Image (cartoon, rainbow, N blue to C red; front, side, top):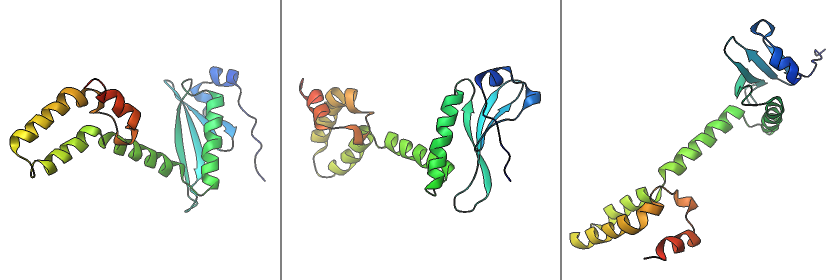
Length: 159
């Protein structure tokens, strides 16, 4: 038989001390209290291996009780779809890193290496100087996936 856990209130959280730690809100959501911080944690079973683990959601008051409950619901939905929340977050982080690494400038450097074998050095230097002067100030750090026709027109219009 499962234990019935009374949902937390904001007042209980504000008045909690390390001696009260951990405070349970139910469905795996727990607030761990130390003398210097209060951290939300979600305890769950991994979808495939069924091993118990946890995911730290963040600190209180940066993440409110309501937000912590919303995150719990979101991660519980992922678990129901056999998606491990830790793997999901890792994948999101890698995707963001890939986007940041796949910038217009990095693509231009690859283009320059390819194109410089086919044209004269003076031509390549002139083309690169034009890119540095007109295009790179506005597009160098833009992820390739974020560049669209409207943005290109805005950048090229003055030229």
